[in-house]
Image (cartoon, rainbow, N blue to C red; front, side, top):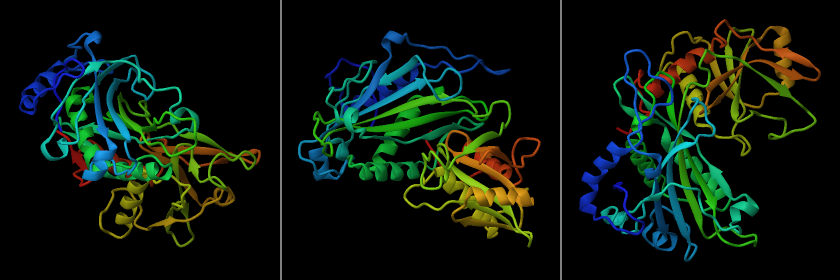
Length: 408
């Protein structure tokens, strides 16, 4: 699948024209930075007026694709799906709203499965148009994923473990009765989008391009039923470090009255929870609740566990991390955390997620008092710090890793 230059809606572009036209599209895309250039770097300027910014759109037929085992594998007869690939420029380095966006629209017939894209067209940027009876509005048939693209010091662009995001998105779709899809095919589409917009990925350390694929049900009905049509669109937003001025530990509140998480509470907002205990025999235990169907199978969570286990077994050695580390997936309660804090056995507590990577915690309000969590001068702890350094090193390309998937 390849992307071509803007044309009028419905105007086909021959496959043999795609490669040369792609080069012109890439050259014409907006190239504004999200922050002033650092010393010694040139500013980038928007090379296209906003009126010419476009939207990339791929329209596929599920019924045909089911026969050919293409993107979507649903067997709903006559079902349609639309793919919108969109790139936004974030103004302040954090995920949120922005008024500057470039969107490109691509339409393809299923024959691309064998021979590549045979029809493309573009349409002007604008809001999504959905029927008021679309099931997403009435029964919340929607889901999203989150991953990042990084640029290393040599300009190479990579994605961090994107295969896990594709698998998790398919599981989410299956769980809420939305169509599933070919994760490898979507990943290739994401790579093409990132290649076109790679000059929007900031060069500064800690910056990245946040990528959010979204899948929503679009069948026009007010009946309660699995939708026979769906829309998948992708929003990209350049973002800065979650803690631009150094780590700032967060405070949490533990409640037994108004539970919004799984029974007993086992996550930190939108992040996964990790607690570190010190035991009498000198071992340092890294604990996180097990995946029981209610805990988000976070990519960062899995990465932290994999790195910690590799260190504990001697497969890799992470500088500064204890040689007596043990890793546990088990239940952990606020009573255990409070008792460990009172006994001086609580080492640290932190959350993990795509946005912040690792977010340290310095206190938890529980039963009318604050449970104080130890943090060091930089806001982190003796376990989270080396794990964070290793993770960020692999993401930014300073540490070679099979987890990094090269885009360009």
